[in-house]
Length: 358
Image 1: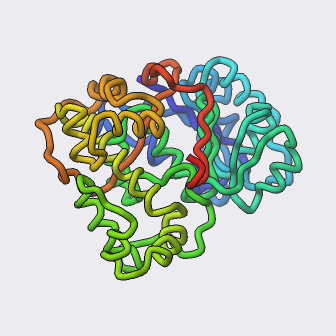
Image 2: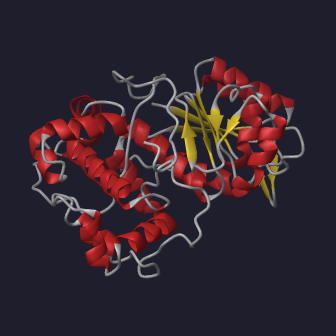
């Protein structure tokens, strides 16, 4: 069973801390068994805003965890406690995967884990992180960054995106989808999506693309073009592109490709369909095209991905083209005790880039 340890001390932000506890600390063995062995680790009774938390273990327990999560740090103008910094560093040196949520990146930076790496934090504090830790390449325009053994997220809701990303790495996209539905949150927002979007987070019916999204997801087996999407949305291709940038932070074609890849992942996990059949069902046309885009996006070939995650999600009876409308997620794997094995071609450092840079 994979152990997830949440590192806490006085001065943490309760929102991000609560998100991590909800995802990893809940008993979700009815969804996948085994789930995570969760540990709340801190020096003593901890004050988090108006709440008091009693840790299960001391900070020294972090070094025995497979994954360590550091929530947001409230006062970024103050150095985080040395005992927390030392414990996080020791955990990483012992082989743990370490992830920070929001301004928890300041703790990872103080521990030296971000030196020479790309990282992110809440957009309001990226300049301060750059100023205080010049050896860190701070990216203010992404939701999260995955460097393999070190991950960082932007602020608030992006912390949930990173938590679901970790679940996706460990258990596959189908499980991550189920967890997201349980939490009533979007199952996947690409790490490269912009932190700050000019409109509110879209909900059904309150943005120009609300009716277009489900229409597309029901037709992923078709060779759709930007013109097709613009025609269905009742606007010009130029206006469609502007609305996509505003609502999703990416382009229509990149968004469409992402949906095709997510659908392919779900079919690989849950059906016995051949790669050729899945290529048709996802609108990729040929197995060669699917393999090329899948490997470039996910990091491994479809067959390798299927072997890794089929034991986690079981098998299915197959699905025809156009089935599988709904939400999509992505996945990959990283090495580490208790996690999915490393896959051929899986790089040690994967930065989730901005839309348009893929």
